[in-house]
Image 1: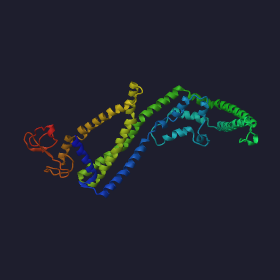
Image 2: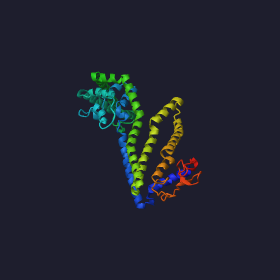
Image 3: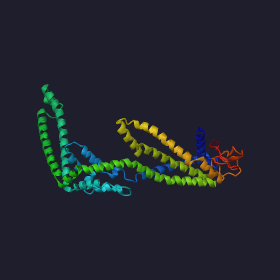
Image 4: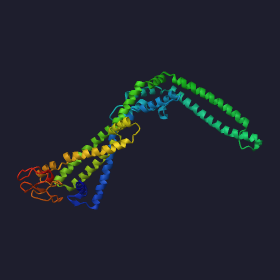
Length: 413
């Protein structure tokens, strides 16, 4: 097994650094490496672009996060807070929320949730000049309250110091504070009354805003459990399948490139075009690298991971570290299965030998040789084995002797 691995590695590096079995010079090798880096960067760029072709869960259900936050809040003013918009959205000429939700659909696969679009419609109806002015007035009054509260904090700090100076019998002209105790107390009371009045005004404005028909409709929509459950279920399903969809699109991007590079490599190898076979071999390796990386990434976040996560969560509760144990056991088994498949089906020496003998090619490296060559002039591989029946030389890895037709033992192939 180790000898086979060493032979495969040796063949891999030989294919990567030689043209017609002649080593590349250093300058050519640098040029090849630079080409590899450039292509690899563009491949990853293409993979990133195609992975975003389908709408992600946040784009397909854009209202889910805000809706969920609203339902989890326990603050008294949460109904008013949901009516407020971001500063950009507050402008009259800005795009509507429904348009913002629909923008990702352009040039992408997938559709935005109809429930989220309905949510955006309800919220867009609140965006009129009267409601905008009410919200701006509330925000301005809240800013005034913050300013007054800060002023009161500053006055209290000086007030406490002034009282201590007064108790100590210090003269007013020697005080380090600009405001006397009596005047400070007066300003505190006056500011407190202003704050109380502003809070009452804000409360009235909020009640007026919340009583508007468009506000009542939006709040009723948000409190509809059936609609929220549908959005939540859709979002979770989209999150579950999105990594699988990404891997499918990324594979769709890479597989044609891999097939083209492999076909070119085999064609160039059969025709003796060394430079083309070298470049196509490098391309083949480059295209396989991101595919393997994306497969391993999928195993960490995709449907398989979620399936194992659900099983471990159900059976062992919070012992989620057991997922790592499951992967330690699962990945080698998958790798073992892939290797067995490649060895028995894709790279089966018996299957390859039949095709290569018919085309007068080396049984090991598949390069063109003469019919009478005992050793391959390209890789030095011995082409024959002695028949146990007639003791003549017959081809390795073929099931029967070419002289007497006697079956060949598998350990001699």
